[in-house]
Image (cartoon, rainbow, N blue to C red):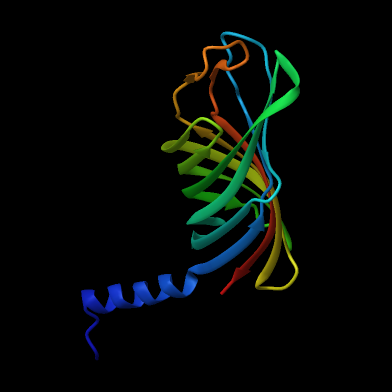
Length: 202
């Protein structure tokens, strides 16, 4: 009779676990809007948005319905500010932002339609280019998202989900020209995105 060793048991368990893992990759179109401004000096009409955001994601299913993964996204946020003392003009600022996310989600197995919820950590790199300044900043944060995946085949799923990201940045005070309309204290802290795309599972 062949003796079953501890190493053999571990090897069989490792093979079984590897075969149960579900590896997936995803690509998404992700328009975004920034909210959460704080202005302690004057009232402004602030708009910061990106109609052309893109996200990529890789995941590993480690348990039935539960997966972990990381993603990388890009948004070119356009910031527009109506100047109160020159109402016919706007201050326009381009803010390219890369966001790296690491987290997990749980999908409820309801046949081909699978609602899910998840969250994790985020790291953002923001490159702000304006008329009077240019800065590069890094922000850490957290994100939550929830949506649904619809499996068109056993391997291909359509996904749609809103995502809410909070970045732990500090309020910034601009007083470039010492003139009314150029003094503002703002806090770009909350990013709302809509992810629409596909996942492919191997």
